[in-house]
Amino acid sequence: MPVPHHPAGSGAIAVRVEQLTRVYGGDGQPVTALGGVDAAFARGTFTAVMGPSGSGKSTLLQSAAGLDRPTSGRVWVGATELSQLSETALTKLRRTEIGFVFQAFNLIGALTVEENILLPLRLSKVRPDRRWIAEVVDRVGLGERLKHRPAALSGGQQQRVAIARALAMRPKVIFCDEPTGALDTQTAAEVLALLRAVVTDQGQTVIMVTHDPVAASYADRVMVLADGRIVRDMPQLGANRIAEELASLGRARAVRS
Ligand code: ADP
Ligand code: MG
Image 1 (cartoon, helix red, strand yellow):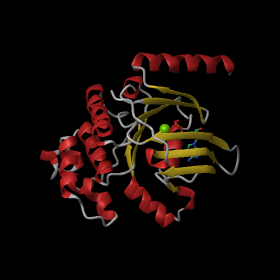
Image 2: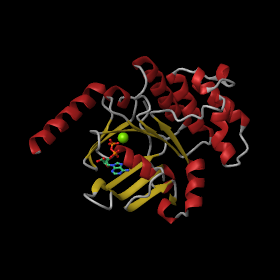
Image 3: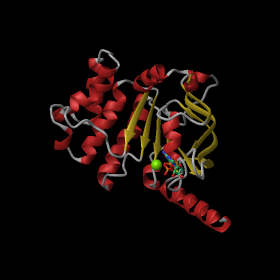
Image 4: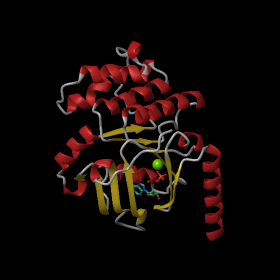
């Protein structure tokens, strides 16, 4: 696999977070979900974000995607710093520059596959680039299913529709929160191979939360969170090594607590 080249300059970075902090809860005991996270994600790379339940993975994704406003710190998507944006501008940026793929697919049941894929364009009043959409549909292998509704599809097919929807706008980055969490092993492998191809062949940037070392082994880089901080940031060295790292981190945490 070619090592991505990271020239200096902001154009090479798809997403950057600086001293990102998120504290939940005004009344009662506040919870620090993120405690000052610094990270940059180069364009054309695939990062797996791992860590125990409650370590801040979803909060990191939501803040970086502009779905949630951090308590403090800054987020850049490309050259745009999100805290500078009005709600309207943030909504527009979310629709045009960011794709999101959730564990639960989040497709609209009343729309066909094709309508679901084109929805972000419609909402942003962007005319579909038919060649690109055809390429996306071809890539996710849904050509025969365009007129079907999501309920007629398997889980893996529904997740492929969600990935096509995320790609339709050619976003700067695609965030995936446990995209294979609801899928069987074989279907998960197909979805992961698709995400890998989207990065390798189309130069997309993917940031994916996963619990599964095998899923993480499709990425270029593995970042591990614990208690709202990055505790490991390493190149992907195969599912076995990832599982060993997680186990050793778990043992170190058990000794400390
Ligand atoms: P992960 O995705 O790694 O499981 P989350 O980012 O969902 O972790 O959560 C990090 C911490 O923040 C947890 O302690 C969680 O309980 C807390 N948290 C997340 N969302 C909220 C919320 N909306 N209100 C209060 N606490 C929250
Ligand atoms: Mg989560």
